[in-house]
Length: 419
Image 1 (tube, rainbow, N blue to C red):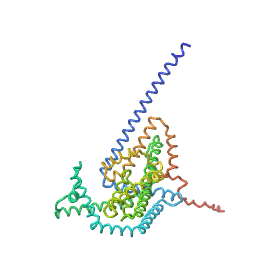
Image 2 (tube, helix red, strand yellow):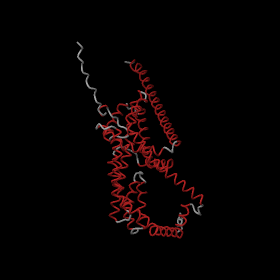
Image 3 (cartoon, rainbow, N blue to C red):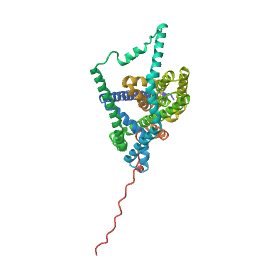
Image 4 (cartoon, helix red, strand yellow):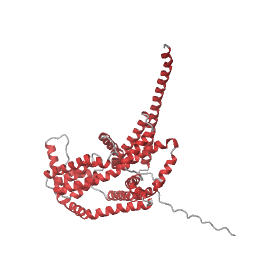
C-alpha cells in the first residue's frame, strides 16, 4: 500500500511535463500563425500600394464576381455553360438598370435641372445668408470656435486669389486624367469579372493543387468562411442600400421635400458606408429643407424620416439580409472605418468592414485551432452548416453531377467476319 504513491508519482510528473510542453507548443504555433498573418497582410498591402493604379478595377471586378457568381453557379447546375450563364447575368443586370432608368430617369433628370436652376437663384443665397448669420452670432457670442463667413469659405475651398491660364490648363488636364481613370475602372472591371466568372471552377482546382495535402483541408475551411463572409457582405450591402433609398425617397416625397428622389438616391448610396454613412447621406436633405423647403420644421421632419429609416434598417432589414455573414462589434467597425479612411480614403472606408471581417475569421481560426485545440473536422462541419444557411459566395464548388452532359460515343457495331 505504501508503494502506490511512489509508483504513480513519476507518471504524474511526466503527464504534467507533457501538458506544459503541449501548451508551449500551442503558444509557439499561435505566435508563428499571427506573425504569418501579419506578414501576409503586410505583403498584400505593399503589393496593393505598388500596383495601386490597377487596384480599383480589381476591386470592382471582385465585387461583380461576388454578386453574380451565385446566379452563374445555379445556371450551371441547370446544364448551362458558365460563359453563357455569365452573359445572361450581365444582360439581366443591364436590363434591370435600363428598366429602372426608364422609370426614374425622367423624374431624376427634371429634379437635377430644377436643382441646378434653383441653386444659384435660391439655395446658394439662402445658404450664404445662413452661414454669414451664424458667423456673426459666433463673433458676437465669443464662441470657442469662430465660424468664417461665406466668402471666406468660398476662398478656402477654391484656393483663393485669381487663377492663371497655365493653372487653369493644369486643372483641366488633371480633371481629364481623373475622368479617364474612372472610365478605365468601369470598363476593365466588368471585363475582368466576366473572365473570372467563366473560369472560377478551374481557378479553384488549380489553387487547391498548389496547397500541400496536409494543409489542404484547413485552408479550404478558412477560404470557404472568407468566401461566404465577403460575398454575403457585398450582396447584402447592395440590397440594403436599395431598400433604404426607396424608403427615404417615399418618406421625403410624402413630406413634399424638393428633389426627394435625388436625396433618396444619395441616402441609399451613402448607406453602404457602415455607421457614419446614413448620417452623411441625410445632410443634403437637411440643407435642401432649410434653403429651398419650408425651413426648420421641414428639416426636423427630414431628420425624423432619416432616423426612422436608419432604425428600421438596423433592427429589421440588415439583420435579415446580412444574417450572420459579418459578425463585428460596432466599436470594431468604427475602428476599422477610421483605419480604412486614414490608409485608403474612400476606398479604404468601403473596404474597412470586409477587411476587418477577414482579420476576425483568420485570428479566430488560429485561436480555435492552435489554442483551444479543436480538430479541423469539427470546424469543417461547422463551416458546412453555415454554408447551407448563408448560401454561396465567391466560389462554389461544382461537382461532377453539375457539369453539362457529354455526348456518349455510339456503341461499336460488330462487323461480320469474312467467310
